[in-house]
Amino acid sequence: MRVIDLTQTITENLPVYPGTEGPKLEPASTYEKDGFRETLLTMYSHTGTHMDAPAHIYDGRPTLDAMEADSFAGKGLIIDCREFGEGEEIPLCKIHAAGGLAEEADFLLFLTGWSRLWGKPEYFGNYPVLSQEACQFLIDTGKKGVGLDVISLDPIADAQLTRHHQVLAHDMVIVENLTGLEEAYEASRGGLFTLAVLPMKYENADGAPVRAAAIMEE
Image (cartoon, rainbow, N blue to C red; front, side, top):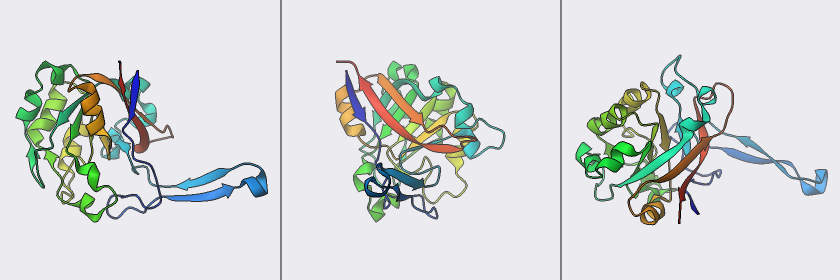
């Protein structure tokens, strides 16, 4: 078995959505003073590689802590979209090219290559985004979730969060700021694998950091 980490490390200078305060990692206990080490973490619920719950957008929709654990694991498939440039939409035909695997997967992950810009101002630029027709495919095929190696399912300029509204209305989850999709795509040879995206469980969770991993049977 091979496990590939798809998670960005949380640091105090990591990229956060514009207008969001960055995380703080402060020493709370030390070896010298207390005989052990603890860190006080202060951060927004949508920090780093994280998951959006339906409750992120819709009052009364499920929070992550209320969802069953099997909502966060299943068959994953990576769609290679690296040919799409800045501001371009990923069309539905790109998903159709994967054939029956796209239908069978519980989660579709979209590899744009944008994670190479993590930590740079360009990360907040005009990354490729899914077309609304592609988002509708996720809904029509009953996906558990969608994952991306960019900061949002929507373009950075879309303050209305059009695609978030479209997808989260159907109680899916969205995983943003993934990394390592290139390695996972090569390891899976474009096929299905086991995906685990396990969010921190706290009360009334509208979103949470996740530890995401692609698990390959060798």
